[in-house]
Image 1 (cartoon, rainbow, N blue to C red):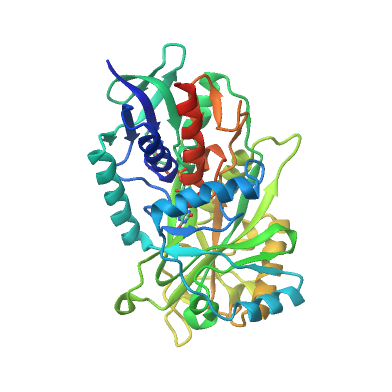
Image 2: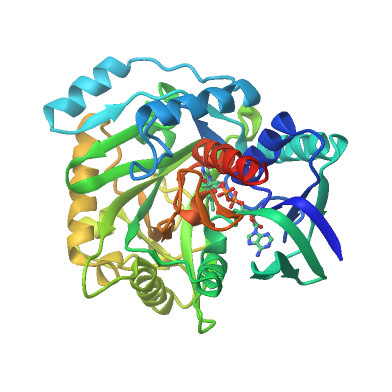
Amino acid sequence: MDKFDFIIVGSGPAGMGAAFSILKRRKEASILMLDKRPYSTGGMRNDCKMNFTFPIGFPLEYWSKEEAERYLEEVTAFLKPDILSKSNIATYQARAERLGCSLLEIRQTHLGTDGGLELIKKLLKELDEAGVTLSLGEEMLSIDNKNKVIRTDKREIGYKAILIAPGRQGFHFLQSVMQALDVPYVDNIIDVGIRVETRLEHYPIVKDYYDPKFYFKEKVRTFCTNSGNAHVVKEKYATNRGDIWYSVNGHAFKADESRNNGLVNFALLKTVRFTEPLASGQDFAEHLGLLASMMGGGKPLMQRVGDFRLGRRSKAATFNGDLYDFRPSLDACPSDISLAMPSKILRYIWSAMKNLDTIVPGILHPSTIMYYPEIKLYANKPEYRDDHFQVKEGVFFAGDGAGTSRGITGAWASGIRASLGMLDYLK
Ligand SMILES: Cc1cc2nc3c(=O)[nH]c(=O)nc-3n(C[C@H](O)[C@H](O)[C@H](O)COP(=O)(O)OP(=O)(O)OC[C@H]3O[C@@H](n4cnc5c(N)ncnc54)[C@H](O)[C@@H]3O)c2cc1C
């Protein structure tokens, strides 16, 4: 049986952060990095927009400002981001404040979906050259921590310390690991909302600030804005029973004037926290996702703002390419999102849309499309034994699936933080 000092499961930013940190601090260690896919499937592969300002991407229950900034320094020094310039921010901020909203100014870079793949390939090559064993296309299935062995779809492998960082898509997998290891956890917070798609001229702020971070009342915020060659996409999720539902998302390719489609998309999300008797945000999210999927014949839903304001369902005929129209970038089902969305969430999202239209006039143009559902399931909150995200002797978690981050840089930082615990454990 193959044996390694460190196994890292997941080649996303959390796994990468840990691998490079271990290499930097203990060069001679034997490291195996596994991923069930040829390339990581999270944010580095999709849009790759990186934020370098606290608290973006850092859940406050795990990160103080000082701590996050200390790790961000190491992330920044490694990734050497080309920070995007911004303009007219004070004007937008003043407009937002008049409405009781705020606009956070952050340091950000955008590589795009294609640029992200280039970065992943470069990082994998560096790891390979530094002696890390890479096994891409191998899936971890289970763990036996008494004997320090994991089972994959190909073999059994021994470890001294292991980092499991399977991302949001690994939500169910991580829960199965926690159940096997008897690690208590909750997943009581989710984000639910819509993705807005409109023409560039109806959301011109993106020329001044690529991904503007607006915060509205009632815990609604803008998230993950894409423009240029921008597309709305769907992510597939399966429940434990095997039922399929989709969450929408968005991405853009790297800046290239000749390929721009003239569209912008961004999410408007409402954070929802559950208390007794509902303990699982994931169960709630799955019900919402399945309802939308049922209404959309297996597709996410979309509705024009014009139809929404009139209380009318959008139909195929409303996407007819007339003068003020644009083709939706996602093949979703024309529908009535208010039939599928909990009214309290919809009310808050609509209120945020109205505020946003006052700050950046245009977003409520009748042709603007609202896609539903966009759901973020990153709130697995395991009971950690220490500050380095150790859950059992030698077993560490990090990244979005483990609730220690909500973005690429936060995931990278949490990978570094977990690696320090792993190195200490092996001393
Ligand atoms: C479509 C999309 C776009 C996004 N865009 C951005 C963005 O632009 N900017 C941003 O900051 N954040 C973005 N995010 C969020 C982003 O994915 C995360 O913040 C970040 O990638 C989390 O890093 P991670 O290492 O925790 O997980 P991931 O990057 O998701 O990596 C986890 C890896 O683990 C692998 N894996 C899972 N289970 C197993 C298993 N059992 N065995 C082996 N391998 C396994 C997966 O294949 C995956 O490659 C996006 C997310 C999605 C889904």
